[in-house]
Image 1 (cartoon, one colour):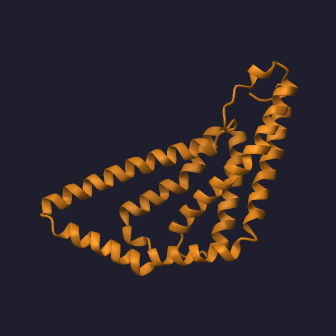
Image 2 (cartoon, helix red, strand yellow):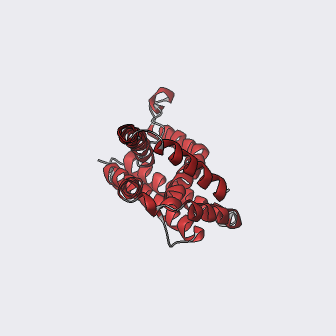
Image 3 (tube, helix red, strand yellow):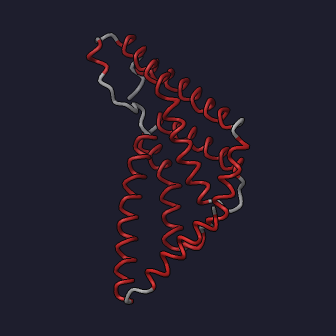
Length: 200
């Protein structure tokens, strides 16, 4: 697998090196611009979703005006859909950390990823802006590292860490369940506080 990727990268580099130097510069500039543009949009959308109290923005008023009923529907919405969102967030953030980290093994990376997601969700209920800034921190840090030191990333190290993950399948559900239970608890507290008029 590593040999195939290295061979592909080498072939692309050889093809580019055959172009005139001015074309190489334009191609490099265009590549950096387009990749940075799409990456920034992805991180912006991802962080906004991760740091949102009402993830789905469903208009619950159409189902009735009673606050308790709205709270019940919101609770059901999170019980059904929240595990899916937690899994997506955990996967994406773990991939970011696998790419960024040089010294941690896969087990440590998954633990850190779960802790960061839980912290972002807690911060979100305190301030959505704080949660969003925390959610953007790692992905944009990775972008900065890549732009200024592309040699930092090692394909072989990334692949070796990905190969460790199947052996950790027993621990991954523990992290996901922890994040999900934490979300349910803080969401329940938020709903009660909101119904009592304590949420600003």
